[in-house]
Length: 126
Image 1 (cartoon, one colour):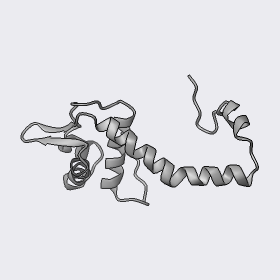
Image 2 (cartoon, helix red, strand yellow):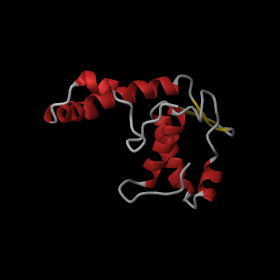
Image 3 (cartoon, one colour):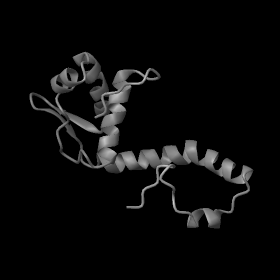
């Protein structure tokens, strides 16, 4: 996890988002243990309650399961659920902006689909 925190969002929420990214990227898979609250708190110099609050959001969302005395573990199909949710969020929030930009710039969709993403745009075809 990246130790840098931004000022725009509570740290517990950023921590939650980083765990979600790790699940989506396959760093954490079904049944994998999350790093312990104590270890994360120590490593990033956070209050353990802040870490616990971020983890609790994952539990509340059904992505992670608490196992008493053993820790927190990624639930089965958490990645599938996240992909579904992220795809819907993209379609609801981001896609309309993309479509509006395409129309405003009078871009041809067929030409766009032929384009190779540039490295500056974050594209990576490797």
